[in-house]
Length: 295
Image (tube, rainbow, N blue to C red):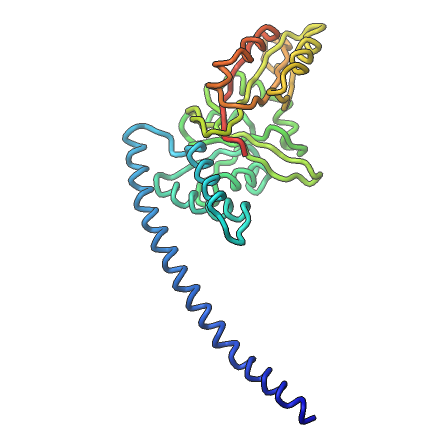
């Protein structure tokens, strides 16, 4: 029994020291948090100045190329236990809060609050923005076009009923007619183990970020052999990936076929190559919908 007394006394002494150690560490954390807050306020001052300059020049509040470059840089500089996903999540909210100080940001979403498109929009824009929920994809396009929303978010490849109905009815036709530009993409892990994808609409094109993709909409005449011709092109082109297809919903009843394709590289690179020229041989129209940073 006597041999165990020193061990018991040692454990008791250690237990008594624990609250002191915790308090010391918490005080150090409080000091670090105060430094972080001070630096965030310095960042806010700079962001407000940028917002003023953007308004003077008529530039959009949302610049996905700049945002993606920043996130890539931060992940490269990160040498702590924080994962890349954690760095993204933290800075998405910081960027969201700062962007809201530039102006009141409105993002139009297809579907209901807390729906899958809203979840995707929150992943991209954070919680410090105002969301406008639209029952139809055409309403998202209209709000962004009329400057009632700064950006719009629409689904393009998911397995939900909400998305299937919108794509089948109108989405590709709306993309064919719109003057808006696709400026970013959003990906969410789906329940079936795949990936749900969404597009962000903006009124201005996105500048190159150094690692981009471009969305291209093809319109083909609905006649025998049209699909076989397009398949032949795809077999010889590794830079184009099909995303969606649908018959035209236009009232003139032409029944043309729409194909949504994703290409590696920024639109400026594609236009400088022969890819689009070659593709136009098989299609009634080839429309560049926009370029966006690759995630």
